Length: 294
Length: 332
Ligand SMILES: [Zn+2]
Image (cartoon, rainbow over all chains, first blue to last red):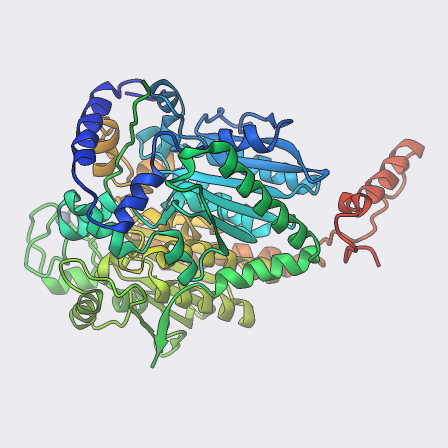
């Protein structure tokens, strides 16, 4: 049983690799699916890349103080604009070894509990919290379930709902379902131009509704998961432009634009009274949804 | 060369853990013994032979728990919309219409103010028959309005949960209902009213990972499948062999995820006891402690008094010292 990330996945990885190569050969049938592929691009900047370019004095903190230290989540303190901020993100890993070690950016309960601990630490010392969201989803595994995955995500949501410090989320790659939202209940939510944010993976959605995961590109289109869609639906506040052909073309340039956006949002949020900020964050989420009345 | 590897998470299928259809026939689906419909209904849909808890529809659950004539529904006028104009092999509108005509319900969540054994309660009930009890915008909004009603009337909140998770056809708006329902629960904290969730078969995905597990007391019916990712997804992703009874109430209880596992015939009485004890705490306590209250311990020595002063100083928020925020409400 692979209770350690990366152990026992060889067969799985080989299969995925094959199906991925097959996928690559097929021309993407539409824009949404192209965006999905860009969002998952192997060279796309990840949390630690942004941290490297934006927060040179980043000090990583570890552990949930209960059970372990989840490598799928990185978090720590850094200086921005003259003050300390808490930076927390999913880390998928670039090469195969790092991906296995980081469990492909899929957190276990201890990952979410580390997030909560760092968020509370930030609250105690009035540090704004900046999150970098990039995960296929929370890890679906027996150990994760037994450790209370659902409760860990729910508690993260509650912690972020209650924080009185400014909170900013940037969806930098894949915003995968509840596993992503657990870091993204924030005052401001930004999305990179080629990032995606969805309730379910296009493959998963296709498998259920089309009964064929090969219909993923259709599902991607139907799910409205691109940054522009999310602006239209009122879920994110703005789209951060990427270099031509995508963020992977220049980590430095992308990180610079992201940093500028975060700084601007921090200044704006810090000018608002903390309780006002909390009230507006609550109101924002309470208004989300679409329904009619008879 | 670096290789790109991603793990495709195959989805939680609502069909993954369908409650065995109501044993409308004459045999129990779990043990195969004779089970006339009238016997089943009289036994609250629990098989008298094997104790299997058969599914209960929303209206039946209300009838089982609520004092007759006391139900006053909340959010009943809300109807689902189709914000994404979602179309897979069929349109969302068509799927909704079908679910509505098959269940006789307008959505997967029923909410109302009522009395349970004479006690005023805000009760929410989810119905798995309606698109797998999935949480779309209406489910979220009805939940929020029910919480508001509970807080407004100062009555406890009880929600009987059953859900396959998110409503895919509402996309990201469905995901945001997780945030919405969690945010709403703050108002119950503010008036110190308890929230008890009753998890029934099956409760998975986004509902379990939001309001359902944040209740003050979390109870479940026996044998219910309660997990974030479904068994099939876990098997497909990790190739793990699932342990016997994986994700069931009993396993969750053993892992510390539940307060109580309660047989359906005892549910009403045990709920009453839980609520009575929770409310008793509020009734007999003094004013809740507030952060800005000045508290100086009686007696003590110079050292402990110094600590009290330091503590008071510590309440001046750092952000003021840093000039991050111009003022703080705790500082007049
Ligand atoms: Zn039976």
